[in-house]
Image: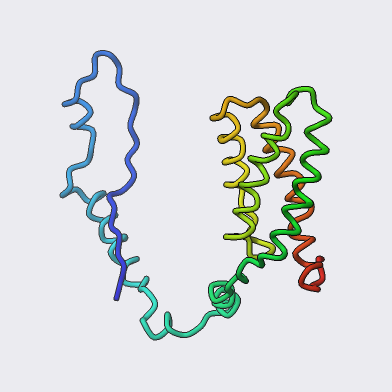
Length: 183
């Protein structure tokens, strides 16, 4: 099977002046029957004969590095661990309560804001988190959105504190929980 792309020769144009018209520009182009056009066409066609697509057999053989790609595709993340999710949620709740209580922004609504963040984080850990590589940003966006929708102060600040803690601790704690090296 051969792939061939034939294009006309590159043309140079001079800028149109206000007195130029389309017919003036059109007359400056070489006609398709001219030697310039046909020699370029022939050159493109000869190049096409030298380029061909690899055969199906060559595509079927494994190129170098294909094993790595296949292994990445075949890897299945572990299922969430409910006990890990419970323990991590408690650590998260404690940290967030301590962190947000220091800010005047939340005033009397600290417990409610922490409750919203903790509930969303717990749901994520119980249903979707399966180890390093599966920590998503979506729950933290949901935290900020839910806090804002309920008319509570500091949605973005609470979500930022939550995501910073999660990035620093969740994957590391998962590796410790499973006895894996966290390097």
